Amino acid sequence: MRRKIQIRTTVAGLNPHDQKARDAGLFIADSLPAILGNDITGISQLSGYRSTARQQYAVVDAPFSSKIPEGFTDDDATTLPTNAIAALIALFDPSRLDIPAPWSRQTQPFDYAGTTLLILGGGSNCGRFGVQFAKMAEIGKIVVVGGSESEMKGWGATHVLDRHGGDEAVIARVRDAVGDELVYVFDAVNPPEGQHVGISSLSSWRKGRVARLRASVGKVDEGKIVGEKREGYDLRNVLGTLGLKADTTGPFWDRSDLLKTGLLVPLRYEVVDGLDVYKVNEVLERYKDGEKVTQTHFKVSA
Picture (cartoon, helix red, strand yellow):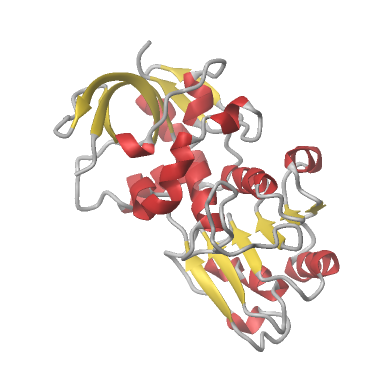
């Protein structure tokens, strides 16, 4: 049994999966009523193995929590749990892209400098953290589709490509950047019907992997895949769930130095004072409609 910590929640953040939870029961259909929001910070109240939740309180697993370093706010820290963990699992978990985490004790050498990584959806929060983790690992070529060029390159991207002009144009831009060597793709935004872009970018002669965040609705249209993939490819589904990949995510929570040294940078956010149900649903509706949303934090208590 994992040790639990009961916290008095100070800040709770919303993400796109919260909209799917509200509208389709994602993760919570069998446990209603349920509370939305996985990105939380708060003040420790009780530690043990039988801590329970109360109103305005939450219970977190001690191995998957961390003290906020001096110089960072609760809102800074609230940008991390869901989106950073999803990107971390996508890149570093052995069952996903299987790039060794830079803080791991891998027994076999890995050629980070000679590795190329494609990230689709650089403008998404998971994509932003993906770029930061790739830079931490000192991956030699980090190719990003979408997002602000100055922001992406500031975090370590070597190539930032325009996502407009249609799939064929995007695939051509990627292939110009990566050649025919690519074996690692992190798709942070596309549903299955759009994942042929990442697959088409993979090498024709080396078996590649695509770690994808969206897999629940639809399927890949193989007729749209450009180029032969003689060695095939693997699609790997990613869930940003802390306890699901404990060996991969656990060590991350001991690395508060990543924040203090600037290797890991919290993302932008907006703050709403109090639990305003109308504002919560407004944010979720914007996610539903595919609008651009800055992560919104609700200040639950002081």
